[in-house]
Image (cartoon, rainbow, N blue to C red; front, side, top):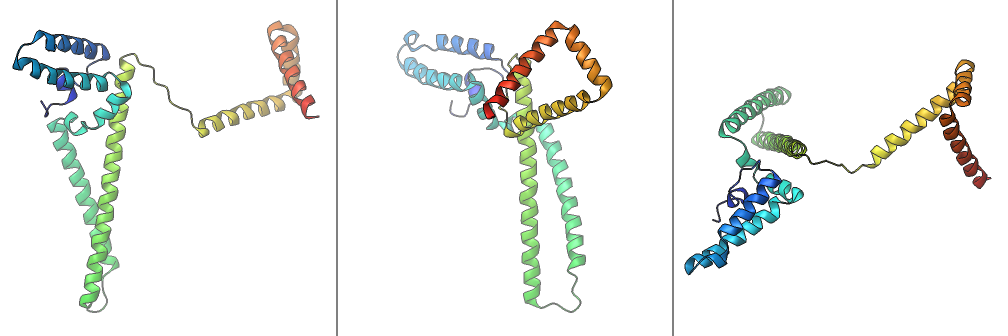
Length: 229
């Protein structure tokens, strides 16, 4: 039992919807309820119920489920896709190492016979360079993998009818303020151009709804300016 994951504990697939998770949970609780068991089976049923409750607590919560799914990333990739990705990454890595070695060799070609100390220093620098490139390469691959799994999970939630809301950042609010400021600036410029000015005036006088909105806005601006006077 310890080797099974939460999806296996509830006997469902990794793409199961919340409704399927709930139905599976209720069915298994009813099946393994300790009151329906006898003797040793009752103790075993109590242990199974603990696992079922633990799995349901995580998979029934969208946020906890997303965090848990990240721990199963290696298991969610098929062997064919994994082998293909591994081969592509190895090819890229070999090409990078080949190009780096040629450039490094050309840049560090000694004019005289180098000493053993110089050779050791060159080898150390080359090893450090390769380690840094390997570390950066792994970071890029991990970041791409994390983004792919996150996007797939969000899309799965959308397909099941969930509404995804993102917390707005300071940049989002700043972009909104700048947009409003640009619209106001454009309106002011158009107001002082005779053709558009006359069109705005005629629109204001002929449309009662627009007239009400403009009057409210003008009174609001007048109130604000009077406060600071």
